[in-house]
Image 1 (cartoon, rainbow, N blue to C red):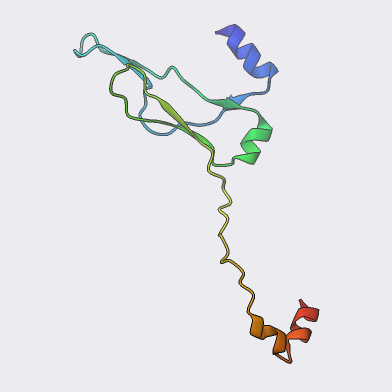
Image 2 (image 1 turned 180 degrees about the vertical axis):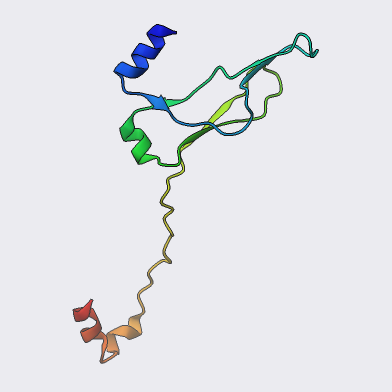
Length: 105
């Protein structure tokens, strides 16, 4: 573990963040034999964290494995609103005020 900590520090990697179920791995069906741990983590450098401000790791449901699959969510903090498609109208060319509108634009 010390070697891993050193690599993370040398590469300037930080935990991305995590939301959802507390554990990512589970073994054993009975309460006395059940073991649950969070084994998986996502790490990134400062540049990535700045680019994806809302980046996070989320566990997904599992069916046949003892590991939760993880989803890396990179949804940007800035949501772009898609503008409506521009459609030229031929009648604009005969409108007297059109030339002035174009010059002001």
